[in-house]
Image (tube, rainbow, N blue to C red; front, top):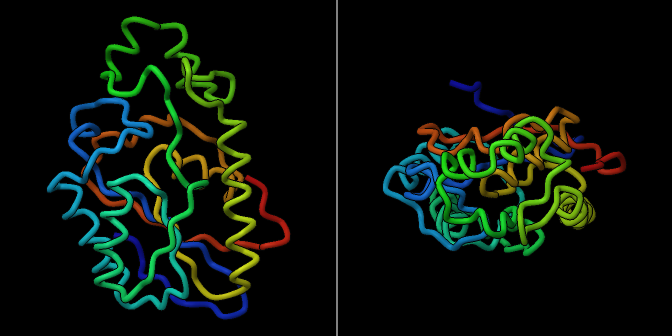
Length: 202
């Protein structure tokens, strides 16, 4: 269990919340930008996250446009008294022709590309999808807009996987790692990250 976060007024904190899981993710499928609703497990995950965050004062909330993310934001909004604002630049990574496929099928049919995607995703563009460079550019736009609106306090950002991993990597300057490792996870994921608005680079 993560320690319950405390509010800081002299620095902007970004509360990164991962969208609850869907049946596609539970099946090990590549979801990407497909508009799939939350599963029952996904709803429970978000409800648990809302309970864990109930003592945190959140000043603003921005969310991606997909159905599962919108549903997650609605649950959080009810519990935490938020008014979510949708930003298209927070949409999930477009996996192109991989979307809807089982991850295991991608691995079997394109083993070299799959391995490259797992180890160095920045060097791969999913067929008819978008590259990580494009994703980072739009995430940079989104974070720039958010930090211009909010200089201090806590801002919640609700996004699906794997876009959540890309955003976290940029904010924390961490390695990306396996962008599909979160598929099928049972636990909700959230993290409070200190942000210096003048120095954010995704």
